[in-house]
Length: 131
Image (spheres, one colour):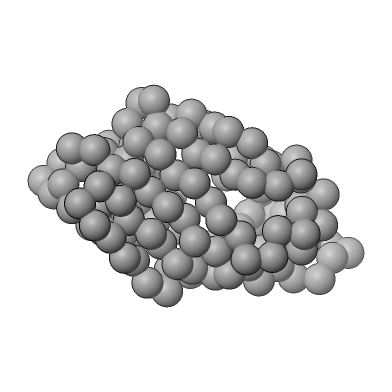
């Protein structure tokens, strides 16, 4: 990895997620990285490493064909953290489409992401969509 800037790491991760670039995702995520997903729905929980992130994506895709896609609106950051403000969207039969304004807080150490914590603007709507 060439940059230790948390904003750059976040931008690269979300581009790799959009492109399905597993190699870049694995490069950016520390093996012990955690993904914390809030809520009381089937995809809520704590996931670890690139395999955990893949498990989270697969769980979402199993519920909502095509999975969720996050449109990055802005990436903010400091020395050890980046915040990704975006809109996550998904559709599934029999439910209104999900349009979730969200902030993902990333912790970055030596250019690798060690934690991602998701904060949803309207958690009850997110829980209803995924349940």
